[in-house]
Amino acid sequence: MSKTAKINFEKIDLPQSDTVVLFATKSAKLSALAKELDDKNNKFITNAIKIAGFKGNKSSILEILSPADQKFDRLIIVGTGDTKQLTTPDWRHIGGNLSAHLTKSKIETATLICDEILGDDDDGEITANLAHGLVLRQYRFKKYQTKSNKEDEPTTLNPKKITIQSENHTTVKKLYTSQIVPLQHGVFAARDLVNEPSNILGPNEYAKRIKDLKSLGLEIEILTDKELKANNMNALLGVGEGSRQGSYLAIMKWNGAPAKSKEKPLAIVGKGVTFDTGGISIKGSAGMEDMKGDMGGSATVVGLMQTLALRKAKVDVVGVVGLVENMPDGQATRPGDILTSMSGQTIEVINTDAEGRLVLADALWYTQEKFNPKFMINLATLTGAIMVALGKEYAGLFSNSDELSEMLDASGKNTGEGVWRMPLGEPGSAYDKLINSTFADMKNTGGRWGGAITAAQFLQRYVNKTPWAHLDVAGVAMASNKSPINQSWGSGYGVDLLNNWIAENFE
Ligand code: BES
Ligand code: MN
Ligand code: ZN
Image (cartoon, rainbow, N blue to C red):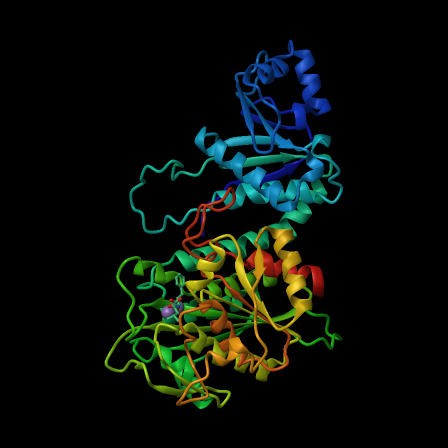
């Protein structure tokens, strides 16, 4: 796990050392405390604001070194713009950008004064999310770098200690430790898994790491090749046929609902292809190293389950991940082979590189049969085509339920982990027909056009009446865009989104 700053919470009391951070809103409006400091010291803040042309715009920063007559080293003023306009993701970004500034200035200890200027923060949400953004920004995956290398942000993580002062510091601390810290843990766990190389994190090691999550109070069951065979999960098994390692279905249960609750569980399913060579339909070598991240969907599920356990969510959730390695080999599945899935439906494998849907076909069917979930959501780095459609900002959302789609859209807006709904045809529709096969019930590719859609149509054939959503996270889970709160290749996308979806709708 990445080493990030220790966060302390205390009441407002202008410190006499190190770095002090104050906030200013639109038109560089200052808090009462900042104004008093300014007035008592010949308007040094007002002067600096004027000289620097500081307007208090969102995430703008003004640094004043050795402020006149003050014992502290520096005063940093962070702009927020109009606080009435700011959403939770905005506050996190302000925290993230401040973190980057502190790191660049090699500041190890800072005190943030979160006073009335930030707006009404009775519930502590604003302050806790500022801190969250600060910490998310600091994540690094440095496990395999034995020498520090010179990046624009140094490897030694500054700052080491952040003190957050506010009037309601006990409320903020409670919110931060009970909700935000578990969320950070889940996001960082997901990032770690995605960043890990495939020679370390193959299916065997991955299954072992999941088994160890028992210690968090999760109930874990791992199905091995033999048990998968007994369940007729030949679509999933077909993908792992070329690998020297085993294939697995890992089931993580969090039973947090009150004992008398009769609610059906929620189910989250993930694609865990620990490396995707394409198999016999082998990929080109350019960029193939990125395919270590083809377990990104499963990493989100594993991270989310940890968050739920750590914050003791009052809900029953099952996480299911299919763990396989897609390799070419004398034993590997060939194009033209026909696999019989657990559902009994047969699949003609046209392209062994369309393997994610084979894994999910059995994982979704198993989850639905075994747990009869209230809602089922799967995440998968399923297609390159989703990036052609949406780029790398949104996950593609495909769903048979408007209700579920609307809930996920709202959580996307709450968290900044956006989803964009894509078309999904009914069974028998024009889109659906594209995957009919001459030799089997269906084929695993749908031709040149609408590749993300035909992949979703394939998955839909393994979902009955369960309200279900498929998130194609190929563009957002790995090789992700850097942002004020994420500098990591593996983003941990979806942990926050689904944690929010659960907290907002089911607890
Ligand atoms: N894992 C890939 C999709 C992918 C591509 C994820 C790039 C992240 C970045 C998936 O298994 C795959 O190979 N999909 C093929 C499907 C095709 C053969 C129908 C694709 O998208 O090209
Ligand atoms: Mn593939
Ligand atoms: Zn893949």
